[in-house]
Length: 155
Image (tube, rainbow, N blue to C red; front, side, top):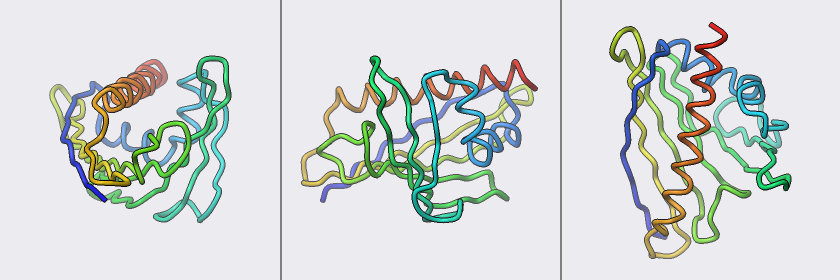
């Protein structure tokens, strides 16, 4: 198995505690309100803490799809959250899992600085497909911006 790590960061006008609560604690409710294509979130295994696997159903291109999302760590004191995509439409066939570690901190003008570490665990030693990575980042960025817009409109 090959392991490939990518770093990214962005800022948001939403305060770190508010953004963390929306993305880590209330995501099951907030995302369905912020993004029309998201239909349901159900716990497949676990109790909501680390190790929990959630099935997130959504509509894409007129077709109902899902993604399996496993919570790895929750660090509320330091505004950290880690999860892995372990199955479904968002996991390329060449990947065993994709882990996203996020940490929020104070950003400019009362907003947030979000640092991300994305670790791609491939099934073989081949690096991830660049087009798949770009498509995944585009979808992830759009989801983040939708949640951010929802929080700004509904403080």
